[in-house]
Image (tube, rainbow, N blue to C red; front, side, top):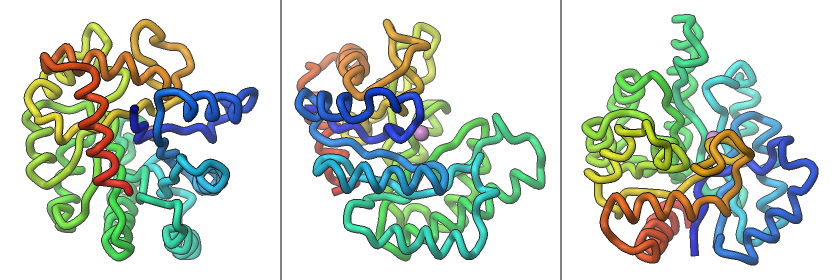
Length: 255
Ligand code: NI
């Protein structure tokens, strides 16, 4: 069985078949799904999905590209959502300098990233970190707020193997998805080879990041089989072992 640690089934790309698809996945090889909220609306929808399906959990956090939604009132509301039983993580939160080049806006991202990290510590929840083109600042914020005291995952990991080892040293998991099946994903393949399987989580980021041979199409958790297969190949172990260990990792972090 596969534990899907990062999907966005609240996305409108699933409007036509959301419930059929989720039921089919949970009747099949997917044992659990963490549906990750990225905006205020996404958090609400994630919680609704988690309340509807026993095996679905929600993460509640505001993505760096959506932080204009945050003020003290929204932040207090977020804190209330984190008390709900099916909310298992704060996420996704972090820094995204790929989409945001303005230094002042980047400063605001760092501010709300740190605030949401502190909130996770306060609520004793793990974090799901989104970090794109912002490796050094992500590490700097994490060191400043003592992120090693907060469990979590660096999702859709896109940096070097050396950086991955730094995150692992802080106690973090590395989220691996469809990108690992891409021909040009040399850094991610090297990362998978160099860090222990005990630190890897399987994730789709559905509807995005579909693995080969579905690259560019709508992604869903069923396609994690291709990701598990690629990791097994890189590590020279069986697919069953990859599925079992990563499932245990996810249960340890989230449940
Ligand atoms: Ni995501």
